[in-house]
Length: 182
View (cartoon, rainbow, N blue to C red):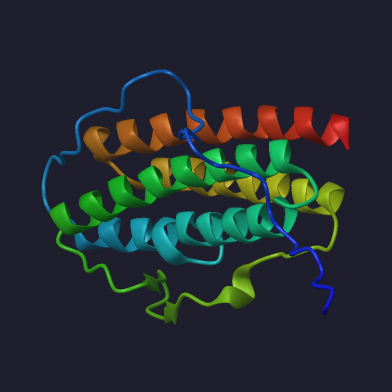
């Protein structure tokens, strides 16, 4: 009789995981008028090096790698990643309204176009470094949104960006709390 080894199983359940975000509504997705320059700025937030697409991918990757060894942190990272997906959706809607394209290309002010790449990600090997990288990425996103708010003269767009910043600040607070536990 052959002895079979017990299968290795990931018992971390993500059932019921919800986006982790500030409990405030988002402003309506609307614009004061079409402006492709503003759409191009938002394309950087959408899929540039510092972007919602990069954040989502980094959070999901970290969640996958931590789920077997640290389920509570993995669940939190998934919840934050889900909030970043909502940010991506809102930015995409604004870009389209502003007359831009959603094609995973960041359109820089100097005319260069950069297709999103996983080279933008920071993928450390342990939980502490993952959390530090996530905190750094959230702060970089806040800084970039603040810069873009200063460049965009559309109160409707800026209201959405300001609301997204609130979530990013909340994420930093949560990530710092997790960091204190590892």
